[in-house]
Image (tube, rainbow, N blue to C red; front, top):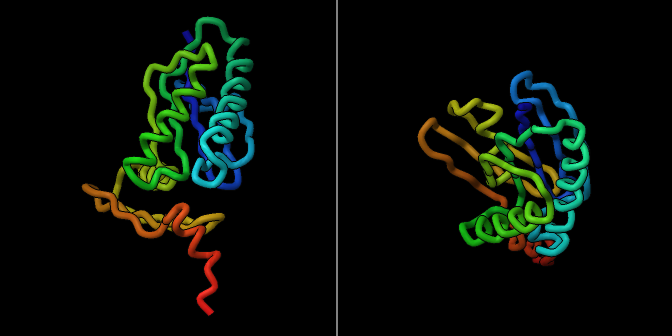
Length: 163
C-alpha cells in the first residue's frame, strides 16, 4: 500500500498543496489556489478553497488504488489564538468531509510555527515572515514565542490614519 503525505500551506495570498510519497520524499503532485486565511476571506471562502484543493488531491490519488494519506498537515495563516484554532479545525474538517480521503494523522497548525519547526528540524531557531502579513517566531528547544501576526487587528491598524 502506498503511503502519502499531504501538505497544505495556506496564507493570505496563496494556498499551496503538495502530495509527497512517504517513503521516497518525492513530491508527486502539487497545485495552488488563492489565499485561505479565514480572517481575511471568511469561513465559507476558506472552506471552498480547501475543498477545491482536496478534490484535486482526490483525483490525483485515484491513479493509486489502495493508497492512504499517512499524515495530512494543514499549516494555515490566521491561527492566532485558541479560538482561531477551533475555527480553523472546523474549516479543515468540513472540507475533508466533502471527500473520500482517508487521513491517518491530521495536523492543523499556524503556518509560521510549522515553517519554523520544519526549517530547524525541531532545533532552536528563529523565523521572520514579512509577506502579506508579518510575524516572528522563535524556538529555544523547549518553548515557542511569537511577535506580530495580529490578524484582523493588524489589518485594521494599517487602515487607521494616525495623522
